[in-house]
Length: 498
Ligand SMILES: C[S@@+](CC[C@H](N)C(=O)[O-])C[C@H]1O[C@@H](n2cnc3c(N)ncnc32)[C@H](O)[C@@H]1O
Image (cartoon, rainbow, N blue to C red; front, side, top):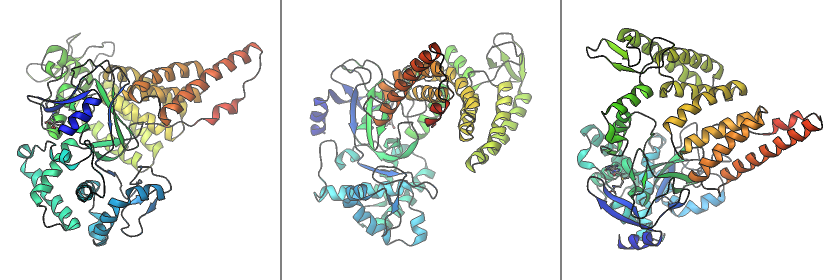
């Protein structure tokens, strides 16, 4: 820990203990928006491989993969990644090859992560892999496990998983209890590794990043460059301030956020947003985000439960919305949602689009215009319409989500930046160059803070913005000299969605 403290002090950081929270990362100098506070390679990581989606164990890419011919479990994109992982995979490969085919199928990413954790400890203790102050098993031992707070059912599950790890490793010196405790540590300390567009790729354990506590109104953001975890300041952080990231999707109401945090991380958040729970403003906000709209189409009031629980009363015009009517629409929505999800996952995008349109119609009747559920439906429509290359309609839905994003992801939030990016790409594709410039500029303003400016992803975005500017000037000069703009120029861009 002392070694870690000196390494952190050089970066302008220190570890302090805060009652109620435990260890926390605190700044010893000012950090400016966009500045990297800390970055770390994983102690152990695994791709979220499934039977339909495989990724390279080294870089998490999904192209040009070849399966390890010995164990038939692990994939690599080429010899560079295979070589860089070889020290550890040599041991893992041997252990996995001993399993029969059925057992191999039960080796989930979580099981592999635990196996890799122990193998790395072994390699470090045998000095085959070097240790550093920020990369050693002692840091894993120091992580919180909440063993005494987890319920019986979860404990049984961890014990079963620990048995499988034991069977794979065949190391009699480690106990089931110890492995089970480490599973509990992974549950509240491991991070989902995402690509630049926040699509999940894998899971990693970053023991120094894991010292950072949560806030629903964080001053920093965690993003990934490949497997490297990077924490950047999203606002000015003065010296002596706790570094805080968000562990969860912050869009939900206070109750929804608190439930998610309690279930997975076993604490009650008391951040500036959460301490407002139960106050009128917070109840109002929850009713907007997750509640219902007034029956009168002309009224924009929000609804709160009436005192005798017969329904919900509009806070603007006092009209009552009956509980039974709400239940009826909600059950229709559940049915349609199941069907729409099935259609999307089986690639029937046309069918899924029709379902989501029906859902949107019902939700527009039921929910407030800033409702998160309605926004999720529009996101699903955007995705499906992009699959169908219905760009104009996709853009219309993307635009509808922006005001809700602005409300639920204030400040420098990567999701808001990414949504502007999608909007900008669609506008440019459709030849709305002026709008594309506006959207791409907003995307750059946010993403240069959350993602930095040096990654390939950001370079591509900056090039797109430059090209959009060039196109606008070209259009202007063509207009002035009455020339016709070459249409095929617009077809050369790719549009992808996060
Ligand atoms: C990834 S760890 C963070 C570091 C941890 N404080 C430690 O001592 O190692 C996550 C755990 O920290 C605690 N924690 C994180 N954020 C918190 C917060 N805002 N309030 C209270 N406890 C928090 C919870 O116990 C949670 O399960």
